[in-house]
Image (tube, rainbow, N blue to C red; front, side, top):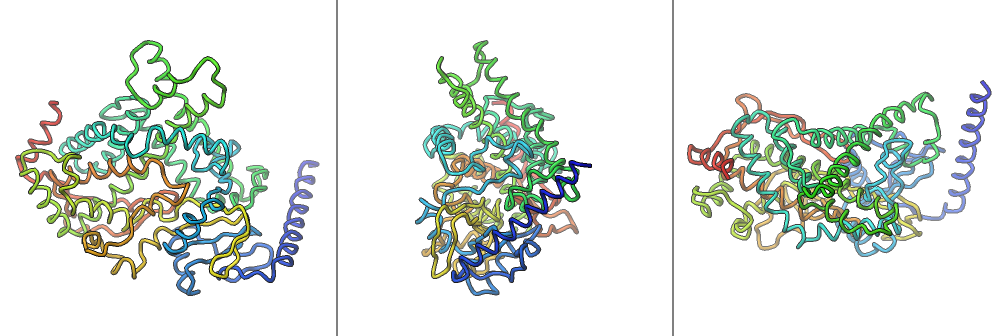
Length: 507
């Protein structure tokens, strides 16, 4: 009973302090002109306006209503700035990256009190630990280093083709297996089982947890108002914490089990070359706990994050081929002109397939894997086009809105690879990988994996709607967005194409 009284007193005091802080802040900055946004309520600000799903659509609407590409929301004193144009994102996150590269503390995912993804540098604030992880990651995944993984990607794609041939109805699961095979072989040198692989299953559990936690309305509130982490999980409305903590042992298993596997294989002299094997071998006698942590964190980042985005992009590709059969036919004709149907395409054909390459760019644009890019945090007061952006503000690049700008991308709702082949091409589709010093370092490997799957599926299969069941363009919310589950009629293009696929199993 005494504890309850103390808790009530703590909450009341905290609310009072927040109110005083907001009053002081507003008094001090009332003369500042924030970017436009929805009308704020006392104390809670725009808390009730924040969308729980499809935020990219809501934020774009705010921008259209205000006539400004940068909009502002206030959640209990925390400032959120949404960037709805490439111009704003480039100006702030690229040109002013020295002050816009920090990250607000994503407590809902990072804290060991909640989900425990502290090893992922995407959630870390700008600082020494983040820089060290970034340097270590760069060694293994810069553009040239990533080329070394192409043979592994081709092997995984060929297994995907065989799986599509044997059980096409399970294409979604086959995509997950393919990306799991690529990542586990690169990160740990693990050759995954054809079915029911425990490492792939562990990764899927973690991804499910991330999606579940990040899409919770409580997650945004916790990230914006960090003191809420101290509220016990039994408190009304705080059951989110209890749910998130269920994933802690899953995450621990995902990091520690494959690491132990590589360590034991190195001791036995049976280890396959991998990022983890290389990093463990480089640990010296004087290695610190931090050194070991980095050695676990780098492959853990690949393992936990890499497959999700690739599966999302390839699922969008399958959906687009169903809805735009003319695009599929044109791409298949281009591939056939290079291979003559007598072999499977590979990376040596990349420069000879401009239309297929345009499909890859359009897949990334049409429905970005992360419609709302990971938020940045500005470390000092700043001004953008007359609007005040206070230090500590969270900035969210609305990649979906940027990629749907009708001026840059005419008829943006249409899947149209031709837009990337005209003389005056749109800007790069790299915005889907983030901005500035926070751009995704695994983008070269991811792009290669997606391209290899797209070109080989086009070479060997026809993707069509199941009779009477044309899928809708509906996508999930969360850090990574997926098409709503749909069915597809996937068949080999010919007897010769099926034979090419079967032959890959004889190599």
